[in-house]
Amino acid sequence: MPTSLTFVKKVGTIAVMPKALPVIDATAPVCCAPVAASPMDEDSAVEVAVRLKALADPARLRLLSLLLAEQEVCTCDLAPAVGLTEATVSHHLGQLKKAGLVSGERRGMNVYYRAHRDALGALARVLDPDCC
Image (spheres, rainbow, N blue to C red):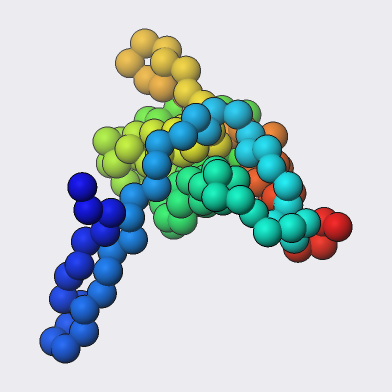
């Protein structure tokens, strides 16, 4: 199975799409040495990259910001706050949940989400260039 896709970006230029990151258990906060401590091994780099990839979307950052401002928020309130449909918001929250950055609890027809501050703190500590 190919690990990347080649496509024509513009006439005369060929670009390569990066391979998808592997699925890992990201439910616990990232637990590895800070990037400034020593060169990262491949497994640690994947753990950090999965979480960063989940955050690398403006809509997801806005959603996370809203969740951090409150104890918990219903998807029905998040959708109008970011100007997206509930289905789109649910997709983005699902990506953040897979990365271990948020959790949700279904109550009737709605799902209430909360941010995992400990997971974000752990990620920030891993990225701290002045750690050591």
